[in-house]
Image: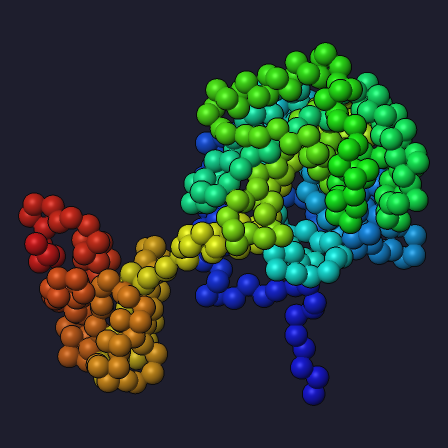
Length: 433
């Protein structure tokens, strides 16, 4: 018989590991709430045109997408990133017309890219991302960076650095594009095959090459600063001023261009400076994008966003010895002594219906063995269902911390358990001091 295993580039999230993910997810939900972001969920696959836009030379589009056909006609792609699907949904549902802008949206879910699996980089991975769509403002750029930075710091990561750059407006990009083409014109033969293609379509992407980045032609390439319009310079200065006001430390990194072609003006990354981060140093990255809303048929609106790899967060948290394990302990354990029929199951069901995480004894076992289960589940209260007590329609309730034990009518059990988890009020009859 064939033994099946998870596909290469995917991992199983086991019960003893899922608590870490839940901890991060709760932090994300809480932080997005205070920043006024609302969750959006888009399909895991879209029409290929959503992601493969004209003149896009990114590795994600040209090499890494999982694309398939439906009935041999329509081309569909598993989402490799979140921004395009969110913007498509924003336009399709005319969210620009039924709410105050900017629309502040966030998502958490799996993405898919075909690349060589390695630590922190799988073919199915998970991202948390935000999209702030509708207003073009340096303040919004700074606030978006602050949200991601706040999540990272609240998680407990301390070895972090913020890198920022600007790609300027359309005029700046055109001027810079001409300068780069002229600079690399005589160096094309020394570039990798991908960069030769990038030279023809988008030479800016050559600066982001992982193969050629140490070559002198790239190190001495023209700098974007020299081709920025005055408007673009002013915009970037205001972003920096806003980050200063928020007391967020940053460094300007002129070579930062990010990996996707739709960015304009502000781009940023937050990276780990921990010595164990290695090749997985980037915690999250993003930037401002113009033209994407229009591409999907909407009005001329700008957006800014970022995405954080959840797996990357877990690796860096482990490197910095941040404990993300969610230790779930039982509230109540229901024990059974003798032939008591379905009563333990009924009692457990009642406790669960009232919000108590409850486990119960199923098979006949000694009192000693059952108390070992109490210890394993770290239950705070024990309910003992015994033959003798049942004759009087009663059960025993024991508080583990104080070792105080009493009997109560089964119909009043919830009332007594409630008081074992609360401070007793004056005149309470539960017996707890």
